[in-house]
Image (cartoon, rainbow, N blue to C red; front, side, top):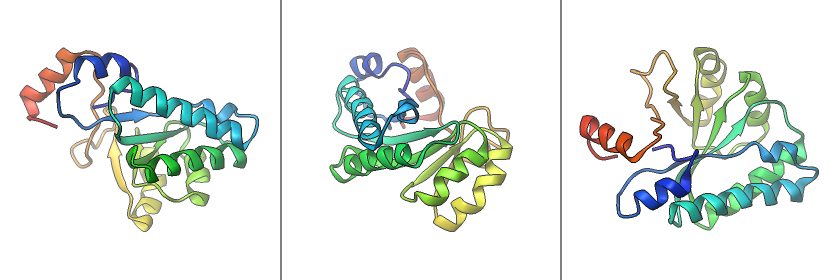
Length: 173
């Protein structure tokens, strides 16, 4: 369940429920002025998300890539995410191809360590799937993806009622 939009709301409403948490990171790291600034921005978002959810672990955390970024920005973001994963706060690390597929490819080619990639269109799938296969990385389709029957999907929700409705149709997460 993608709780990125309002982690505190979902955290409060679903405290006693079992669900697979999905958090899409912010793009703040792409505006960092140096390596340490990027580390701190990603750490701040992780802390905010974990606190809002009332959990110690995020099941899937996606690093969003919209445009090309500076090496120090991505290196800082990756350092913060790896430390969080080693400390047990992130179970699976993903990369989100939010912008042009080549921007994501540019980041991903030089920074391994992702368990899954989230794609939203056929062009991203075609461009990024060969690297995913080579690196044994899972591919997840966003709701808008046309081949959703082939790939697992993440369902975005905006209320607890949405969660319950999905559970009635599909069973527990």
